[in-house]
Image 1 (cartoon, rainbow, N blue to C red):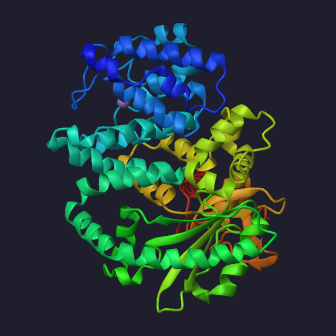
Image 2: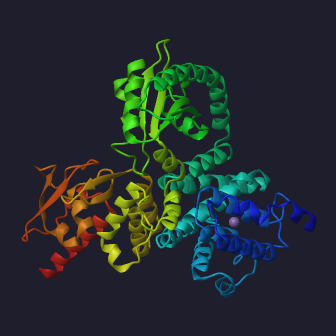
Length: 509
Ligand code: MN
């Protein structure tokens, strides 16, 4: 194995990937590298490579995501306590409490082995609770999983299916929810052939057949658009490119379209990247001037970002020769955020204490967290509210099936953003009504709700809220929770509080 060690990446290959590393950064990474090398010296991987290769690759993924130095160090050390026989004190002494916290967080999550539903859910629960204290723990875990997926072919066949299913059902959706496009698309595509081998073959074949044709269409459009953009003096340095839809996302879309690939217009999409938001809309105007858009397929994710923060303009156009094509327009910043999501926030935060480069949507999350109940009894750092909320619920939930239910309704479903009259953003699951909103803000507000003004219009307390609504709660001290509210409320939080309110009234009587 000593010979093999010579072939693994040097610490400099990690340091090189960090944006303007300081001497202290480089030194810390070298030290972690040496500790990992020593801790794993007698271990190997299924691939036959030294085990340390895995932790180095994990660290490289984290560096490429733009994560901070402590995360990269923790990536190098993430298996040392569990598998490398290092002690917690050892890690704290050689590094610091922060690194130890990250390593232990990742270790605690274990390998989320699928050993029956109960065990699995227990692991998931740990995942959320551990993460609610520092989102970096989850990102390190995702990087660890990504490298395990990249080397899944070497793992014994009997284990592959379980690892791949877990990736598709747990890890990829989390990466997606965190807005890290780079991670979730690769995780999905790596897992796809192991989980659905037949479907994978079918989709692969369909896409191979269609790809060349779609690409030719896009190349023609691209030429024409570039000429037009060059003429426009107000748009500086646009990048006109294209992207191929990744296979798993193509599969999901095909399933909705009876596996008819001719119904899919974005197998190859043109992508225009410009400097700022104004230019995005300007390009959209130019595109619509050149080709007629399908009015039903224009999506403005700049004005209404997706719940995970994704922003872009999408439009589907008639190409004039019987084809249709999708064009995606975004700024450089939006593009970066689509690729790196929460990970880009971690880095910005470290480099720019002033916070001027903080993601706008993350700011909203933080504001939400600050105004919530949970914020009062917990250190708030860089954790989106929906994760905090999940973690708070999970700590009181002992019933695993209930947990799974919450996970599916609260976590994997899309969320809406609504506003308080002061402009604070509240993040709720789709289908929520003013009752959910009121309990979210304060239990007193929920308990005495009598009505609501939505966008200044009087509305009933069971009205389904939509993203962008401004919600004001009207209360009446004489009002108390009623059983029928349970039918209206969508969130676990409101359900629990209503039940508690009803119980208290019964006891009072
Ligand atoms: Mn690992």
